[in-house]
Image (cartoon, rainbow, N blue to C red; front, top):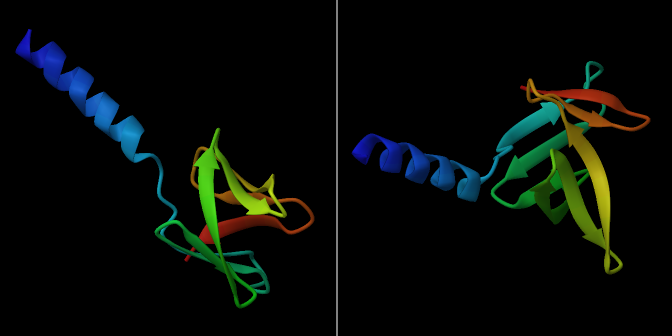
Length: 88
């Protein structure tokens, strides 16, 4: 019983904590660079808040939620018209 409870609580804590993207991600050319720290995303000198839902990085713009990046199973980020970004 204790093992089941422990596994259940651990699973709940992992889900509640969510994913983190802390670090810098770049495309193969090095031209596109995204730096994540906490709930902030810095790109092209601009810092914005982001959230992760359904393996997607979403930001608020003009009151609407915009999907900016998709997170692949291996942690690679994908952005339309830019391609894949990998953690440095």
